[in-house]
Image 1: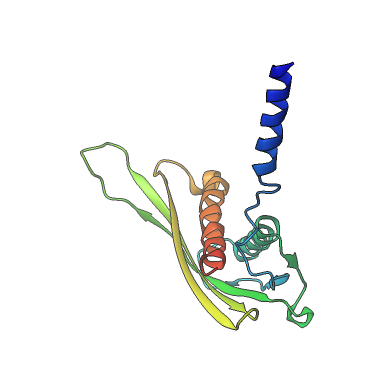
Image 2: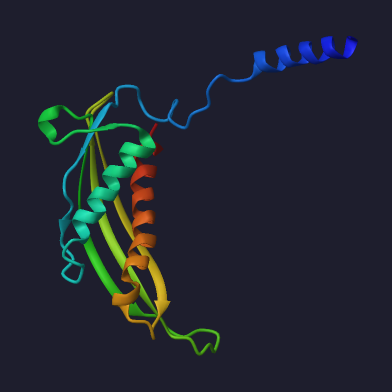
Length: 170
């Protein structure tokens, strides 16, 4: 009987001190942030795939909506607290120099993107972000056959840069 009472008291004490909710969002963004809009990124990189800037735009929208929990609105007339604009500035494939006497020859796909993030609440602010990310691949591989995999890897990094910038000042 004493064991049961001890267990019950321990259970009550532990659950009384346990937090009722743990969330990444709590305290991470100002409570004034409710809505956002991401304008389609401009494609300033002549070598980038035609649809790349719109694909990256959609990934940024999805990340802000799903990871931060804000509501996507269609345009700036819907009074968003955050407006994200930007451009894909560079898309290049360059050979890497050989090092350490290795026989492997590698190429590097580098993508540069710039963003301007306008925040209207709780105070007006403009944040700028320049992100340059890359992925290496064997020079013997055809870029077209592995492009999807390389873009996924680079896009994840660029989107994370945008999220980090949004969350860094708060």
